[in-house]
Length: 395
Image 1 (spheres, rainbow, N blue to C red):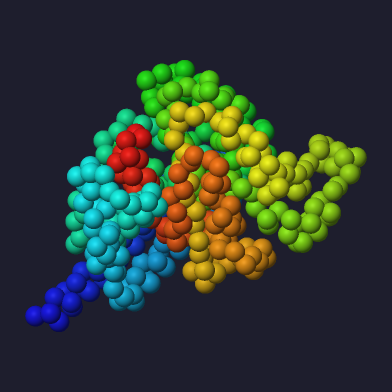
Image 2: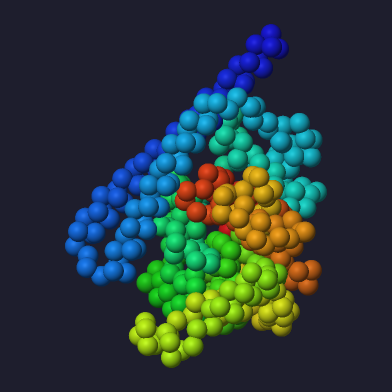
């Protein structure tokens, strides 16, 4: 009987894995087809070289996404590994789940609580035969997605795929203010200020929860610092995901120093041949992310950040062989002895001891988990945040 039960469970896991990969393919197929049709129609009309390049890039991105999703389905048919429930045989995890579900206080750290919730949600997504008692709370918050460095190369804002699922299933709204991935925090914080203030003026009843990915969190910090205690009470909190809160040592990498040297093109040359000044190396961007600058800025400004919103931070860690292809390359270029996600060292994505923000710990994942073509379970991460924040009465 035990053997039959084990075999049945393994088969259920096998089917769940195939179904999940098929769902991903269906989403990619539907979205990519719509984008391709639209882009081809636009391509016929366009004459501007810059717009044509943008359209071709979008078409290429959609094609790659669709191809990778199709390959994932084929791969799932060959994967017969079991999906272990990390929480199932852990007494502490079961205690935490019971307390979260029943709204009772539990003797556990914030990291333990969040990780238990996250693993529970993720397993329920992987194993369709498993029913979790955790529920996404009903909430009227609007999620504000703030993307990171060079997000323009992707077709959608970071974590847009996960946010769309929350909208479809739970009617949780989201917006994505425009920030320039090539610019520094000073410019982007001003852009955020204008867009958020306009949105709140047009939607005075909405409560905003910022979900900031990578450098988007740095830009948001500068926006919050500019508002201080005058920040609207409608902004209830900020969650930082893989944000280099304490900067990045990779800015001082030898390869980047060479690029910096080569990138110092005289203004006269750029104006003569291109008709305008250019910043090949995004100097302001590098400055705003450097470890020395960020550590100094945070120490000087943390007491000037608005005190009413909550602040949470999550970091990612990945082994090179488990990373996205681009993250494998960055790990090879930006070699670090410290745990990292391919771009940001874990210790730099956490709040320092002197700040009252909540560090939610470290999860497995690389720095491109926010892109729509990533197979990372964005919905699980966002759900886990909502359940945790609701349990802590922060929503």
